[in-house]
Length: 274
Image (cartoon, rainbow, N blue to C red; front, side, top):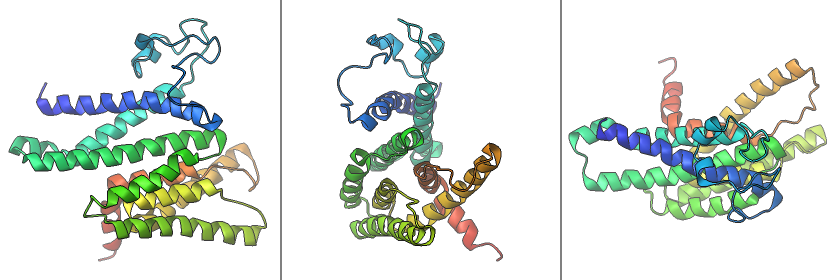
């Protein structure tokens, strides 16, 4: 196995291990519980999970999706979150550490820079995973994720020349302000609330990490995805237009698409018809 493949495998395993912790956050944050203690345990029989039963993805398969002590089924969410975070970590590794750089002998300062950018976006993507799964199940986006995320993204912007603190600040204002405006307009027209404050703070966090240029892209993509999936679900379930669908996962999808393909998509769009 080449060194590059070894690093790639490590990136995936690292992401999956962190994904195991994200599962704890997803389960406990909606109930305002500590994510540190008590140790992981079965919610049914309170069996404390041993380290060998807590190996990401693998333990779920070996246990056949059941608690070792009482046999209660374990939610498929656990391996899915671990797998998703592992894949995101691997994608970020490929983004910042292409194989040709290793073959050509990348300068040490480039490796440190790549590791910094990888770490920043890994934290950002992990936060999106947590907010997505919590919003899907509970229709809330915890302030414990978004508010510290806004501050962290703004502070980090001072150390990223391509972003810059002013760009990040405008991103916070544009992200939060644009959704506030949309929510207000919807309330005026429909005479009811259609968007929660959590979505507003989530988009503000995205603006802090990605800058104001990302906001229009994220809003457009998330609205498009939300419309397609929302209409599809209403047709399948034969519900009317009052079907409540959390918007946070679509915002997260738009942000991830911007992180990995935003530049290419925008370039393709601007060059259409030329």
